[in-house]
Length: 466
Image 1 (cartoon, rainbow, N blue to C red):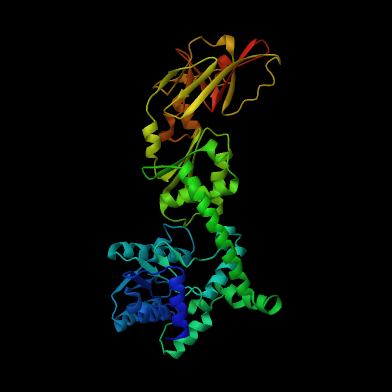
Image 2: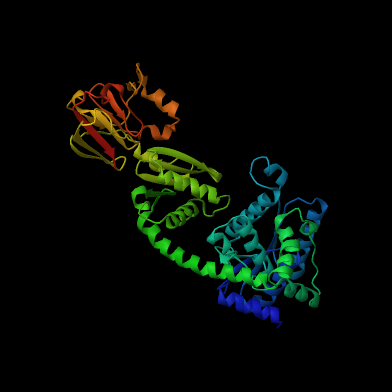
């Protein structure tokens, strides 16, 4: 048994990559890494008591060369006597409907196909050929792009079905093994082009760093990734407990109470958001730091209701005290959008069960001639003596209208919602502070001109949402 096979065997055992009886899809591009991976796993197959299946994705990006690679992979599977599955992807067409470079789209489609194939043939693992040098390049590339600690931990030996049995093996060791065992492979000419960032890092930046700064820069980068990976695992375990405590998962959606999220450090909130997104869409592909940042802004905002649209039809809703993350239109919001009406306690607190909010009111003296009352989306003030005695908190009814603050005429609530671009799915969840025949406050948005405070107001009713 060669040293490389022994190393791979130890790696498989150390990281529990393969269990006895596992069916393993080997992703075979035709390059030297994937060819060596297939050969090594074939030699360990009896010892691991596993079944091997070969899969190849033809991205069609290099014309005849792509077709040549596909044929090579098919023939190699036949030589080894393993089942073969292949797929050709029309990247040019996908570019018209998906965002990203051709290479990014190809990668996403390849991984998606491999996962779908694994589901179809009930494979337990999908083996990829990434090596030790790939890991150092990945860490440096992510550092250049501004990745955080999670990104800088690099590629894992396993994630879900995907495994990387060669991740601790250097590129030179793989090349030597292929030469010694006379393994044929095909070379992707695009790997020589410095038009791609990874290639430029491989061909120019790393050699420069090795020559001018640190001859062991690859080891240093991988050591950084290892340290961050261990710390990341600890934080993941911590956040798994927090997720179980604070997240409500139902109908494919994740719901948080914003007040509970605000008690946590922002770094933990970001991890919980990533966990929620992963729970909804099963991965974080096409989710960037920007998306996490705008969700954080939504959590911190004063907006009573707002919707964010993320890639892959992910929608994030803030509805008063709740943050909802899901795919497409929210079934959680639909279930909560039933009509409601409650007598408002003045002074006192009124709980609106359908929205999960409390509306609290208190009577204040107007000592500042109408000044000094700071309006916020969740806080409003009214001339207490202008309000009728029987106030209600209710949902919108057909024909509702009010006189918005600062306007002389009235406006239909339906038209007001359209102006504010409130999604139709959320309009029934906007509570109204209503009199018998009028609207005093579109809660969270605007008060009525009729009940505004001025210098002659003696008492002021402060109303706030919690």
